[in-house]
Length: 278
Image 1 (cartoon, rainbow, N blue to C red):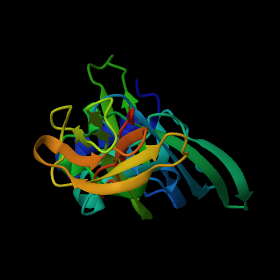
Image 2: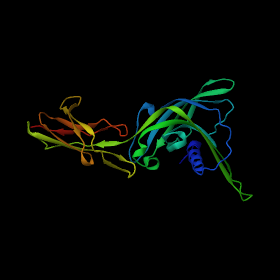
Image 3: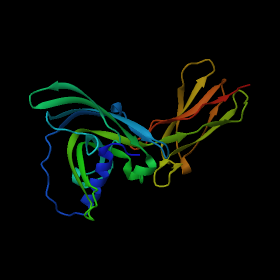
């Protein structure tokens, strides 16, 4: 359930703007957003189900007499996908009230340090591969007014919004999965081991994971008693993301595949498969 004005007002304002009906504009509020940090500077990796909570911190400077009540008006930082603010194709906004702490005041302004969380539901917000990649950051102010008194057989709702492009970007990536299976087990020392696996990634159009072809995955080995894996070779994924290679069995230990990720897809590490060498 949306509890904060930003989420509701964003939806309403975008719906109204889609009608392209000229209206008189209210005065733009004198707000300033800066120092936005999205997801602690890390990529936002999203699968096909569940929710990914994205923390955002920023600085807000507002007029000392300007009220943002969190019910009929809201302000915060949003993420958008598109070539510009006027041509945004997708948008992510917080549903809940940000937490802001006053850090400085003057006779005319209040400076606040704010933090918020954008809850990303892939099944609700992402529609295909084009939603992965670099998103832009914007400051947002929205307000709504409603007259529900129908005693005169009339009700009305008005939306208004302002957005300011901010420095910085956020990377949104499709989650990846990786498997590994070494056979035969157990194996005689010096014999050939076949290590198979599959690399898949989230397909937001279907809500499922699909094979990721043509990607390098490192086959790694950790000997029994060792504390770290070492890369044995690099294998390229084939049809349906399939991985397969052979190695000589030399000692007891665990094999796994490791995928470093791409600009649009997150990293993945397979669960290791332990092999007993006789």
